[in-house]
Length: 109
Length: 115
Image (tube, rainbow over all chains, first blue to last red; front, side):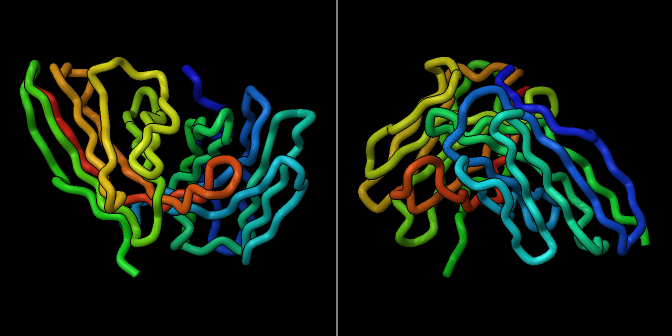
């Protein structure tokens, strides 16, 4: 399988807490992207970080990229019930996205 | 601006049949990509079209094919369906003009069930 790896597979936290998800990939990349998928809104792009960037912020999201370790992390701060979803990393390798298996995030009220 | 639309949303076919799925991208987007999502294999890239040309292809058998029209609308065809082709097929559009894979805007998907 070409899949990247994500951990944890599942994460359950209280509303207001921070959530961190990790992603590893196998080959050199142009960029790495994070997506969210839930039944209501489908698959939605969250953030893109290029291979020459180390950190990027978007609202409550912070993404880091370590190309030497071929890994990335997504931090969601001050979680909300609406953040309940599956989160996927996708690495752009040879102009195609290689997807991680996803982290299922549950926010408890 | 209207989002990516896919038709049909649900489809039931039997083994050996063929199927055609349709995707209309966001207006102005010239790149359309197709993905297969299954519980076992996750999300996998099928192919990408840009300006009516297949620009990239994933690791799927030749039974999976696609095309893109001059208005950027795209179709995906699967011939000789197998049980393992049951999946959610997602279409995504993007500008497709920046280096690397651009931000993808996904449609709601077509849920294909092969009996």
